[in-house]
Length: 276
Ligand SMILES: [Zn+2]
Image 1 (cartoon, protein in one colour):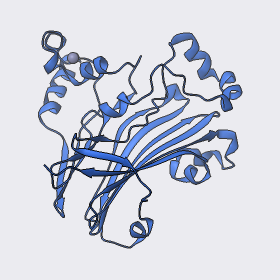
Image 2 (tube, helix red, strand yellow):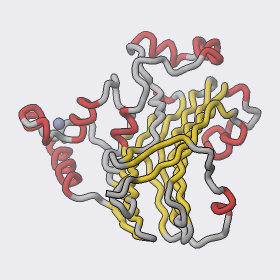
Image 3 (cartoon, protein in one colour):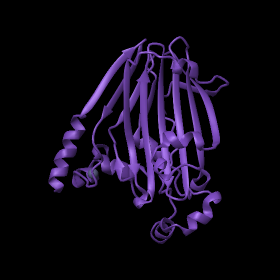
């Protein structure tokens, strides 16, 4: 079994199962996708002796201060957008998990009563030291060093996004997911669409702790090809499950929940790239 895994991992390392490139207005859009992170180290000897060549599992385990990883981690699912100057905006799983706030209990006081009564709390308090077992991330993508980020009054042009434009390039992928020991869901997904006049990315972190809380952290990246900047907006929405008056069957769908959830915080930034 282990030998088979090792073989799989080695092959995945060389060859992503799926990838696509697209160029428009001087910008380059690229995704790669591959399968889930194996739970067994593919080459223990080599991973110990040459850390720079360690397998994905060892890289994740060594880089992250988490007691355990999400059940499903897609280490090779990566979305990269390159500016004509060479600058980059990337969405990748390792950096997203690095942004999981560690050592801090994630459930807020507002929900503490429901939380204390839930069996997950019992389970976790017994077994695990405090760490963010919900894998909540405030990751907003990874920028190349030549990117300049500043606060802005500009906003995403929703009218442009509502226009019926042809979609030239589209993709959607999962970065990680965990079912919280059957007590809900924690997932991070990212999708992109490129239209003739603009591109738009939505990365969504969705958390539902059954009977306790829902949380959505969205990162939206928007660029109008006639402008010389990119807009990045980050929003955090969350509330107790009992505060949303919707049938329980809808609690699996963040698109249905989001309009019913209060906005807790929002920041909008302008990204420009220094021309080398
Ligand atoms: Zn390894």
